[in-house]
Length: 149
Image (cartoon, rainbow, N blue to C red; front, side):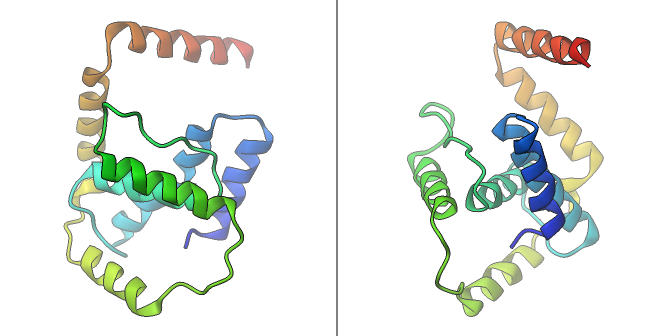
């Protein structure tokens, strides 16, 4: 369950008209903080980000599932399920046994996934996977945003 502060910051981003990925970024940031605090770990930076995105979808952020070429069918299916969960009212209390089991498994994972080095490495690899045109387009969009402010 995400912290109230995180949900509030994401809601504020939504009110300001920011993109769903920006809103979801708050949940990813919270996940990185949890790993750094030692609450639990993650096998990789990619897994830590995925946990944050899943929490965002379940909290109601209108984040689309990943595209067909980038991930497995199972991941897309899970993302769609998370989005559905985020849209409807929660009436059943989550299973405490299952929650504890998930947390225990994550506690056994390493904590280096949220280090500054690991995040930088992941960002560089993610950028390399994108086309030159896509990177250029993002940079132009960022420049327009800076100019607007």
